Length: 450
Image: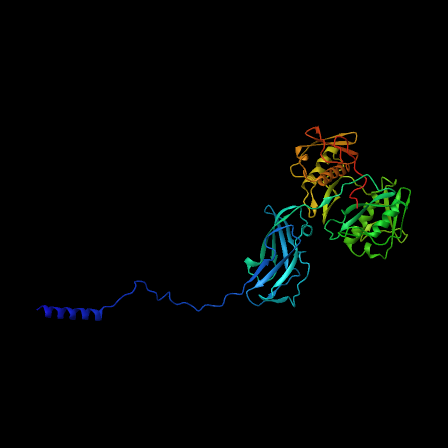
């Protein structure tokens, strides 16, 4: 029986094994196992800065376009790169394009690059080129190359600039047997308005009348390689009956071909000559052309009558050229003729403190407050808060720049001959060597010695 039972059990197990369907998983993978063939990796072009992204006092940098493989790149603009500059997350320079020192050759707007032969471009992001004060900035450089993906079109650089420009204080002292004349030149890149220009004092041999000497020296041009000559030929100049006459040749294109150059020449002659008013008793300048009375010249300026010029209501800001600051006069157009001396002083101070222009340093820090002004017989007292004492604590040259700026600016108000400075109503002692702030301060005769 037992043997029969075992045989029957084996038969039953065999039948079950031959008919049972095994299910490996309850999940149906029929819709998930269709894996496509892998395609080649997309050819990406990367924008990199050879010097890294955290920079201190950079002059030039090299940006490199590196592709994964060989690649044609195209552009439709003259500039491959432009820059936006941010200070404390505020955009202060937009779409700056004067970056590339050497042009990259594109044939019909196309260039070929590869991993072994990437494109390298040298960019000038120096403090002078961008016109920035000392400080920390974010510079976002963007490319115009079409083949760059959106995330690779720009690179952000964290840049710090230190203030290594110096100021040469104004002076009343000329070298022995020399005369000082003030000449107005333009900066080489023409980054300031045509009517502003940069004054420099040149000490010359006093062997000729100063108005003639001024013309001679303007024709020689500036000594600084960062400035440009402003005038062309001059036939002659003479002084008669309180008028300085300047005769110009009609054929010299400096005065007629280009409106910008003509305006620079006009203001250079006019402003340079009017600095001689303390030496020559004159009140106007008259331009003639080829020894004849002209109607218009300097690309449209009327010259039929003699021309007055006033150094009133000016603010003197510090214009930076390479490694030097030059005090430069700007007209304060918010001042009205009928404003009181006190109102004019407030407007000049606000201009000095709040002006934001490329290449210009505000000589007044943001914490300095003009608490009041008092005019007594031509001396204007300026009373400040104690932020004055803390101004430029480690830089005597910049302290002198501050004092010179205040003196030239506030004595440009008509009937103000000198200034005095107090802090919270008290006299200031030992602020900077060479200037006694306990006495009235008069504007020095020679600004920005060359």
